Image 1 (cartoon, rainbow, N blue to C red):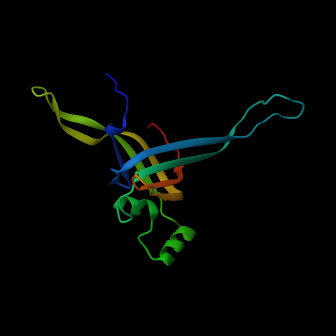
Image 2 (image 1 turned 180 degrees about the vertical axis):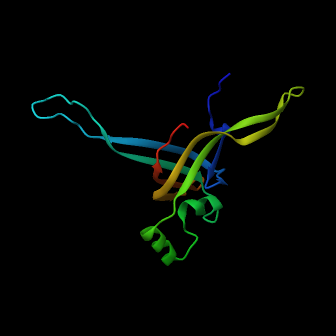
Image 3 (image 1 turned 30 degrees about the vertical axis):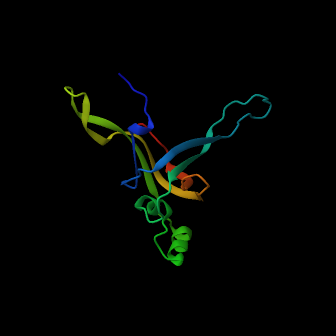
Length: 159
C-alpha cells in the first residue's frame, strides 16, 4: 500500500549533517525557451530550451548561527576577509538531500515500529547549491526564523 509522503516521514541533511529544524523546503526548476517561427510564419514552429535555472528556499526555526547546518549554508565561520574572498573568488557549494524514513523492524504483538532507517529512500537531492539571499526574522509572539534562498546547478533526476 502506497502512502503519501509527509513531513514526519522526512529526514533532511545538508552536507551530510542532519537538519532537524527545517520548517519548509521548496525547489523549482525553470526552463527558458526561445520561440522559433521563421520568415513568413506567424505560428511558432518550435520552442527549444535555451537555459535552465533551479532555485530553492529553506525556512528553518532559528537556534543559533553556530549550528552546524547554518554554518554549512552560510560559509560564515570565518573572518570578514575570508568570507569576502570565498564569495568573490570561488565559493563552496553544498547539497540538500531529503529522505523518506523506512521501517526496518516492528513488533506486531504490541503494534509498534521498533526501528527505522532515516535514510531509507532518497526523495530528492539538490546538488551544487549556492546562496542568493538569507533572511532572519523575530516577531512578537513568534519563534525566530532563518530563511535562505539560492540556486542549485545540477538538475534533479530520478536515477
